[in-house]
Amino acid sequence: MKFNTKVIHGGQHHDPSTGAVMPPIYQTSTYAQSSPGKHKGYEYSRTANPTRTALESALASIENGTYGLAFASGLAAIDAVIKTLKSGDEVISTNDLYGGTYRIFTKIFAQYNIKFHFVGMDSLANIESKINANTKLIWAETPTNPMMNIIDIKALAAIAKKHQILFGVDNTFASPYLQNPLDLGADLVMHSATKYLSGHSDVVMGALIVNDKALADKLYFIQNASGAVCGPMDSFLALRGIKTLHVRMQRHCENGKAVAEYLRAHPKIEKVYWPGFETHPNHAIAKKQMRDFGGMLSFTTIGNNYKAAISIVENLKLFTLAESLGGVESLCGHPASMTHASIPKEVREKTGVVDSLIRLSVGIEDQADLIADLEQALAKI
Ligand SMILES: *Cc1c(COP(=O)(O)O)cnc(C)c1O
Image (cartoon, rainbow, N blue to C red; front, side):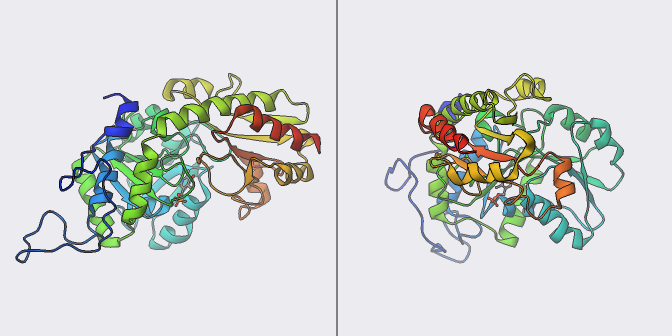
């Protein structure tokens, strides 16, 4: 089955009791048993729920994996991954990680004596220099937020394999439409399904997809034992979102390219970070591992002018100033004062998060309207 068919049919079947084409929202916490332990496959909805099962099968299918697990949020999914580790274990991750991931690593799990190293993953030597006998997980994100750096998944997978370390990729920014980390050698894929997978800014959800049965069993155990599961209504919404992922992503990519090119040519813009540009430092890797370049991009104003950046985000009308990304509607954000505000200025500036940096999640509205909106906001600075 090709991807465009998988998003609609992958792992899906009509409801066995009624023939319903979409799985019903099984809004139930528990299931009748005819005799203790005798039931139809479901006992209690933390453990399993048919609407969630349908979503989990779809998730596995679209990432070319065997097992899918859905969680209450992206961070709940990451929480489950780190709970496969134990005290004394070490993790190597990127130095421009999603802020919430950085927070759960350093503020929650560091307390339980799990050690985290944050390195620039453009250099494989950087990564190898941190590997020791306690290293149990390499955690990557590509493209990264908000600088749109690209990490070579295949190269990282080879290092992880050589040292027998679990390798997980946060595939939120790319979505399975653009890249499939399991096919490139990763052991585990994670999504904030809140973003492109659900795609309509109406759900908070996380996902994990793996191929290895032993790893899947460990994660299912944690999912049930820790209990950060999503409800049937959210499962239904995410499943509905996934069915249009391919058409939405195609438009996100087209609009992303048009907006990136418009901004690059604008005299008031200094830099545009978008992996589709040949001048992007990791363009060659992006071209190799991604099918297109997506609708996420960041830019700075001439002279790195903070006031100009604030004026732009205040004056944009179609681009709503908001956290999050990956919905049908265009959003803009100012990382230095929003998502990255808790990171000291000197530290964030080292990775490129300067005062005038603006991040765009380019939606699927009409391209000309989006560009006209940027035009009017830029005319005011
Ligand atoms: C949003 C996001 C997360 C966290 O997911 P939630 O659903 O908000 O918990 C993790 N990684 C990336 C890259 C994200 O954008």
